[in-house]
Amino acid sequence: MSQQYPALIVIVPLLAAFIISAAGWVNKRLCFPVAVAALSVATYSSIGLLLRVLDQGVVLYKLGGWDPPWGIAYYVDHLNGLVLVVVSAVALINLIASKKIIEQEFPEKTGPFYTLYVLMVTGLLGIVVTGDAFNLYVLLEIASLTGYGLLAMGGGRGPLAALNYLYMGTIGACFYLLGIGYLYIVTGSLNMVDIAGILPSLYQSKAVLTAFIICMVGVWLKMAFFPLHAWLPNAYTYAPSASSSLIAPLMTKVMIYVMIRLILTVFTPQFSFTILAVNESIVWLAVIAIVMGAVLALAERNLKKMLTYIIIAEVGYMVGGAWLGNRAGMTGAILHIVNDALMTLCVFLVVGNIVYKIKGYAFDDLKGLFRKMPFTMGAFVVGALSIIGVPPTCGFFSKWYLISGGIAAGHYGFVAALLFSSLVNVVLFFRIIELGYFEPFSDHHGHNHHPEPIDEAPLSMLVPLIIVAAGLVVVGMYTGDIVTRIIDFAIPAGIV
Amino acid sequence: MGDLIQTIIAKYNYWIYITLMMIGLYAMIAKNNLVKKIVGMGIFQTAIILFYVSIGAKRGATIPILEHGHGEQGHEISSHMVHAVDYINPLPHVLMLTAIVVAVATLGVALALAIRVYNRYNTLEEDEILEQIREK
Image 1 (cartoon, chains in turn purple, green):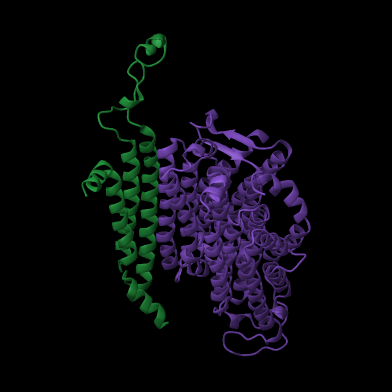
Image 2 (cartoon, rainbow over the protein chains, first blue to last red):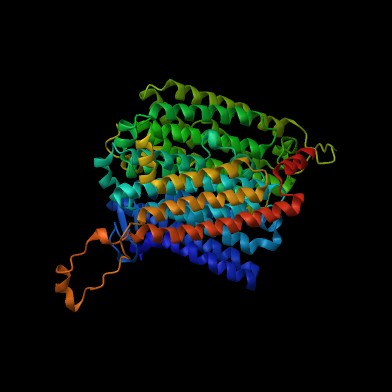
């Protein structure tokens, strides 16, 4: 059984998606338990797989028993073992937390929603687990297509925003496919490890250079790296709460994983960092992304949209950290994948709870919320502190690694951008905390109610949120273990 | 000049795919109508499919099936040495079957979203939609 974990991670949610779709016709109440069961199996397998990787090293799984260069191989090392656990756990927690709000927002369409949800998680887990470059493209499209559906489900401006995302997302995925095509021309292989073995003699080839650039641009489009970010804010803001709290933490983070995988495994650090020598300029791009994300977030008067711009700044952190080209920066980037997934999940679940009770997320709706929803807002404060980077929350530690990476690389622009963004985050979040704590609650008719009774979101939404908020602190406490036991092994020895 | 023409003719498949890709990209960026943008997206994807198909093609080669398969006449293979030059590469073509399926699915999702947009705004022209959004 445990030998089959890599396959189970993808196959169980895939089959469950079909079962949910069928169950939706029979009885809508069956959908939710099936979805939870499928994602629980995926989470359990991911954890089991990570433990096996920690114990025995890299796990190679040959689908259908075909040997690697010919068949599709699933290749799990410390890097994607860690990301798998994060993706499956975030998806499972969000599913449980979102049950009530899904039923509130579209009671008629719960069946299709759970189908798309589980299918999207299949795609994301597949992207992370696969060791085949073309297979990655297919799974990327599975995740993207279901993502467009999930984002458009809310109605309102959602479909238009999702359509714009679809245009950009398709260009991104096509660029990635084109890059893989160039790699295939020169190497004749699609297996990542195999390509990495063939490439060294071709490092001077223009085709390899083109492949690298095109792949990177495609992946950057998908992760909303600054100049290519325009689709993200609207798509995430106008989506239903349950979709945005799944996609916002995971999609961009998984694409960053793909970028790191391309840098480390396919093209190898020697090519990416030494031969190309473009680190400096890409880190400067990341600096611009961080600064612009922060500035654009300042201009927003709407909680959810503000958070989407913070995501754009966070993408800048991770791209910059990965391209610093030293060990501390790469550690920071990988650690930040974990932390940012949790932080984003936390604040977006808070938005979900607020929407469930208040039906709005503009700044004016947030007045007096601390009295009305103390636990939700308490979790929000923890998430906010983590995004700002206050110890002992986990956000502090990844930022620490990123900053020390920046200093080690002598890239003070990056360090300054990180500090600037932290300061802006302080302003952003304290503005909301001030609104929530000191302003009296007012409903949509403008009447002020002074002594507002506690009116919290239901327990099924509150408990997962508090678990995530506590998780932020716990992950922060165990950062040392995560780095020394997992991330250190994920980074090849060549990077100092 | 003669060299340039030589390069273009020798690698004409790449020039065609890049031209098509740019036409698609232009339509996606510059067109105002949402469905025209979707058509541009289709051209863009088709360009990449053609690129893959063209790298697998080979002049004067045949389908990659061995006439004298393995089995009892296994020893004969040595007399019928397999010359890779005589066969086209099937893999890029097979990959493109998947990519075509993906392209069709994307087209379907895009058109479904366009219908939803039309139902809400009663138009598919982007500037009119933006105007309606601004008025609210």
